Length: 329
Image (cartoon, rainbow, N blue to C red):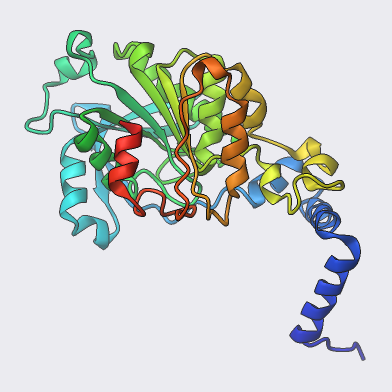
């Protein structure tokens, strides 16, 4: 009969293997095993450790007069019962866009003027003469635009701007499947919507949080923008799993063919101001990612960075809200 290995013995065996091979070699070998388990499909490997869509936190109630528009309706009781989230829903409108890859995704536009809803004719075109900045926001990998409505509303209210939240294919009520290529197309479609609505590119700031730094860096390298903000960004997709980034046999070297979101390459091509913030206690995307990206930004567009020493990956805002809003303002 087959021998049964206890969990303790298994963990001890893994630790010995890790010590014998070295952290980088062990990680590279593990990715190779995952590659074979995923049928030797590189796209499946990328998606396996990148995209974690939650259960949708919202639905979209269509405008009876225009099916391309609608409004956010929360499915989660915690959001529905929050005064902040109710205000956010009242101040926003959903616009549907179809991406170049065929996904139909919702884009939520949180307006600065929350006192009244504008008539449709005036909503179709942007008032350039009195134009506030528009923050085009790409969220992290384990949330959706419904959960982000509170932060969107706070950004709009505190900074006096408008915020446009982009949903990813396969997230929330968007069609399609999550992938790096689809996130590029999702953000491009939202950007095109803004420009078609009359928003000048010189008034658009793209904001990428965590995984969202990938599509934002790509957009900045290919489209005109007022600036970009990268919040807890990554150097590249596979470099996140490098245990020892400066040693040999690291996964980003062995499995370069799997890499995606090459932010460290694209950031060198941007021509708009770039502001990077990263918590020094980040244990999901290590701090050196943000630091090295900041160093890679061309000097003429490199904005002073914000690296709070006590912040991790998910609490950079909460650790010091006054400092956060002060820095991005």
